[in-house]
Amino acid sequence: MPRDSVVFSEVREEIKEIVDGLIDKNLANRVYNAADAQSWTSIISRDVVVNLQEFNPNFKYTVMCLIMEKSDAGLHISNSCFWNGSTDGNLPTKWENKSMYCIINVFGLAL
Image (tube, rainbow, N blue to C red; front, top):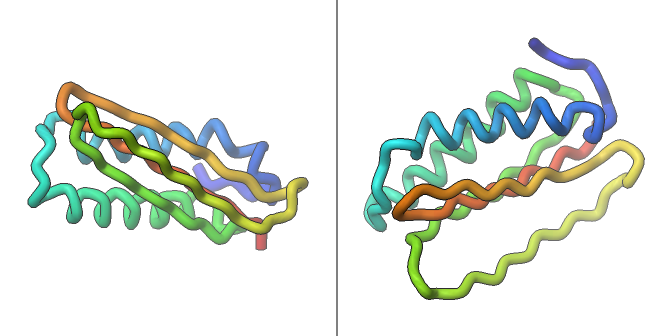
């Protein structure tokens, strides 16, 4: 159900449910494959933006999606945004299965 809030923190839990559901839908039964990972990241990022825009069009959304094979390799990642701390926000999400990690960071900037 669409929400009309203009404060990210008020819809953060619902956004998390949307993001988690889309990750599960796209990756739950998959095994990491480098040849497919790029298309998976594109599909998931697009689906997150489309679903969030339908859920609450009062924000501009930026979505970063990373899929990485589970291994002993390290990963360091940083995202930054200039925003209004009272209305805008972000939601980092980490998901994993036996073969891969998926990290998504959603920024919601109130219009």
